[in-house]
Image (tube, helix red, strand yellow):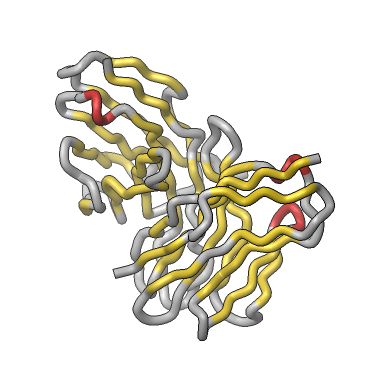
Amino acid sequence: AQSVAQPEDQVNVAEGNPLTVKCTYSVSGNPYLFWYVQYPNRGLQFLLKYITGDNLVKGSYGFEAEFNKSQTSFHLKKPSALVSDSALYFCAVRGSGNTPLVFGKGTRLSVIA
Amino acid sequence: DVKVTQSSRYLVKRTGEKVFLECVQDMDHENMFWYRQDPGLGLRLIYFSYDVKMKEKGDIPEGYSVSREKKERFSLILESASTNQTSMYLCASSLYVRLDRPGNTEAFFGQGTRLTVV
């Protein structure tokens, strides 16, 4: 069965500092990995995905994520955080085949001015 | 632009009522999903559908049913609403995964329906 762990419920970072939101996964076969962001009272917005190829994936709003197969991780990163990045972030995984996304429990990012 | 529309942003219903949550997508996607979101629990899959008139149970189907009569529309039905079904409900759609396009399969979400059962 597929699963995703986001070990931190909350991440606090100062504006301008780099940020990392952690994600580890478990899946049989090749993983397809995704990050989504949710602003208050809104649906989820797609940020980026890893399917194959380069381990470093670039996405929307200056975010990137690094796929590490040996550590089964897909951490979300940004070199310089903005206050407007404050939101709830979800990591998700899908295995091979037409299977639904399985989500982590989410990490609340708070960027302080 | 990709669009998934949920018919209501906020709903208040009474215990025991039959509740319909509607979702429409305009992207000709084969797959459609219903998740519920609760604090500390993330998103949990209720039901999904790969095609018209087809449905599969997700992780928490009890107390729910679904209907997909047309490709663009996926309805979630609470047969007899209960207070423990108070939650945020999110609909999503995606392309069917094929071997020749394994990657083009991110899900697109609606704005969500916040349902309160009193």
